[in-house]
Length: 228
Length: 247
Image 1 (cartoon, rainbow over the protein chains, first blue to last red):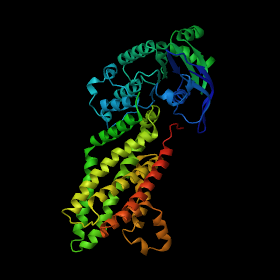
Image 2 (image 1 turned 60 degrees about the horizontal axis):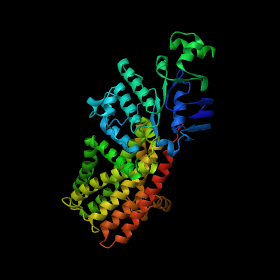
Image 3 (image 1 turned 45 degrees about the horizontal axis):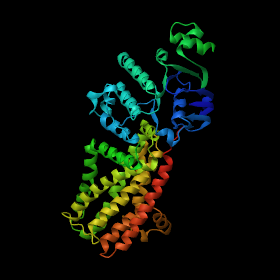
């Protein structure tokens, strides 16, 4: 997947300003940057739901948003988008039907077996986020776009999910995961750092630490953002 | 891989499941028309003919209001909660989504029309010469119109407060001009022309034909066809507002 000179204007704001990048298949790529840096806009552009995308954006060998891509795509929007008036199981069955997939063991993988018959509106924020994540994982998509999938989850569950993401990449899936928590960067194989809709750097976590000489990710990121 | 057929039916099933989890709304949709028809019958206790003339058009107006409200709010929620964005990033087509909704709300309209007509034409003694089956067919056509208008309203509202305000804005003028209060032929020419352009006029015309004549079938089918044409136009316009890519 690659983008060349991608621009997106959202109202008065230039959300992406001439971004060029490439994302390798079968790896976990972290999309990092302060809030408002364009992470969600980039994910939405790759998912084909962002209006006003200018520039070249090629996904799985097709143009972003084309029907061929949508069949292979798992997209988790930033807001936990589940039906509040359906149970967890009904939500997942419906999204599974869009891909002709089965729900299978997914409820266990995201730790929601006990909530299967609870209505969406009765779930806690973290549970809702996990239903939203599970909906994106249905049908083993080749490309997973996850917009802040681990926000508001406890450390134990976060670790399990990162393990799951690694497994999925091991099975050949390409994952693009945004986060504003720099600590999560070390779970990724590649990093794309954004600021003000532009690319700051594209590198591996090890390169990021080596280049900045910082001990932890937070510090490394701060130095990169401030000094380039 | 999924087929368009499977995705459409999954959508209809999902909308029905949402209704099933909200029995109070469904109960209100079914019983409020019955209550209103009963009330009308009591108001016109000694004027049976007047009951026939007011009660029949009402049977065609209930599905418009009911389905307009559920569609506008359901679609507004889809747009604002992010579920629509998520769906449009899957292979689901916009037409499949709309047909799925239409199947579910069509069933709801059939249930409402069957129960309301059974009560109104039975115990309440409303006299419809044209037959009960056509009443239900007309109600379903009107329900699809309500869905099309509700879909349009959901595109122009930012919140549920706004979307319910579209009910008086889009439906009440039609109610005033549809011939229920004053026969359309007796209205000032300008208003008569406007009423010719409004879909509810034809729904009410259809019910009047059903009330007045045994052999009005052709005229009734004509009215049903016009209501369906308006419904199709509203649904097409509404489909245009379901953008896959949003700002």
